[in-house]
Length: 198
Figure: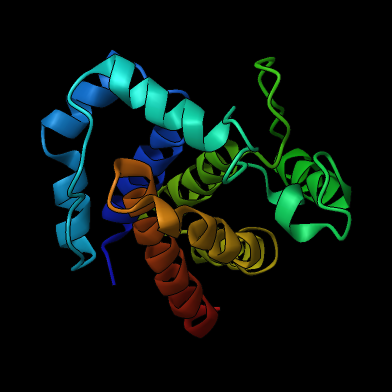
């Protein structure tokens, strides 16, 4: 199991990775962040990483925003969780309720609550509160945060990460198919660990 501060970094990095890429993300990748996270999780690093921002943005756009023949792997949980497969379904409301219950609100960036990056940012927030609880020796707070993580992971994230990752499998060893596989492995590990803990 990763140290709690490593878990925090994994959530932060993947939250950033699944947002529209910029030069800062490319610099973080070039500095070895993907290899570091892969090593922590004892998984291979990415094979085919774009070397410039334009190529990174092209890969992201082709997989998640627009592609002839349809979007291969939408970044929204409701597409996978709700029976009708449409965006902004009942599961989106449940995700938004989780945020609201913690006193959080969405940015005005136009993304629905179940956008993968936002869900990972929420988990980053919960793990951050867990870190606070540990440093303050508030075991009730730690328990509350780990329970919230477990519940969110098992009901609202893990069930759709599996089909999401499968949809990216045909696209080989590019950065995003790699990221989906590694994120899925990490979330499975987190879910199993949190189930034992809570």
